[in-house]
Image 1 (cartoon, rainbow, N blue to C red):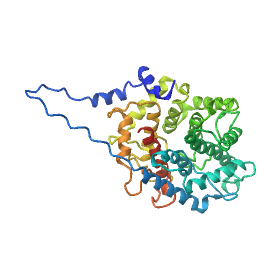
Image 2 (image 1 turned 90 degrees about the horizontal axis):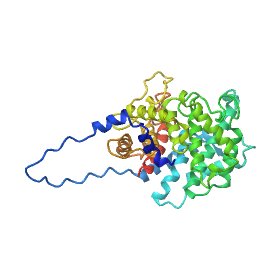
Image 3 (image 1 turned 135 degrees about the horizontal axis):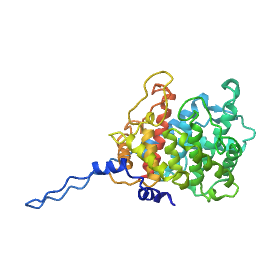
Image 4 (image 1 turned 90 degrees about the vertical axis):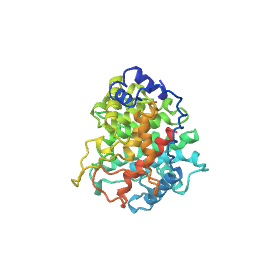
Amino acid sequence: MTAKRVWAWMALSGVLAGGLVAIIAIGSPAPVRAADTASPPASPPASPPAWDRQAAARYLDGREVAWQAWDRTHKDRATYCISCHTQGTYGMARPILRQDLGEAGPGRAEQAMLASIDKRVNQWAAMQPFYSDIPSGPGKEIESHNTESVLNAVILSSYDARADHLSATARLAFDNAWALQSKTGPDAGSWVWQNFHYGPWEAPESQYHWAALMAVAVAGAPDHYRDDPKAAPSLALLTGYLRSHYEAQPLLNKIVALQASAFYPDLLSPNQRAQLVGQMTRLQHPDGGWSLSELGPWARVDKTPEETRSDGYATALIVLVLEQIGAPRRPEFPRSKGRAWLLANQDKTTGAWTAWSVNKNRDPASMEGHFMTDAATSYAVMALEAAK
């Protein structure tokens, strides 16, 4: 079953019952009464507001420059730490913008990031992990090495997908990641993930989240990498982990599992899909967006209330997933309403889409205060490009 047929299959299976049916009913026009005279021609529908790709690219590139300049990102042998929120999402989104912007190749910030990843992948055995047990705490070396291996593979395969060829470095990155994949135990098929108790990127739930994104990366890797016999046993372990651990996940992770199921349809049962689509529909705000705070069990460590407004990250992620599973594009459906929210909420000054930390009330002008907006902007780019 192809990703484009998933939504039609879900509808035939009864997945659209309940929440989406209610949306259809609410959006139905009132009956039209006959008129004594002909009505004037209807005005053409207004075009949806455009989004500014160049401004989004400037924001993302500027944040990559800032990340590389931050002393905390400088690591072994003149390389950079790869963060899930900033570099990981940047590496998935930035190459997608290139074609529409008419760019010949990566800019300086991208080149520096890719050169760092290339060095770390090809000198993997000699590279020091991003974090050490001293002073970061027991287990941090293993966590950071596992996490980095997945991020390397996800980023490099994203770039190679645009070139339609899987490079030797990307293949090596996958090999490095498979070598660190847990092969036994209750979490077999996943990776030990960086855990500083900062959701959603560096917390216990992050293990499943990025395992699902790794499955998506494998499916999208060029040269039919998904069918590589060498990777087959590890991929089987990965998909088995995603199936067996699904029910225990927060809603955010279930949404990413739904994304993976667009490429691996047997990951979720029809009932699991139905329940998840219903939850997503019920949580959509009247303005068309979603809030990250409502997709997980988070509580801020500074005791400040979670931000409940619609945000760019949650909205873009859900729009992207709905697009990839083939959700309807009619205006009254969640995918279209979410896309309309994204089109209306790009910051005209910065080019970014705003999101907020679920961990604490961060100063939006600080480096850390940008992290969720970095991820939101990257996901908004992916969602809008997928939906064009």
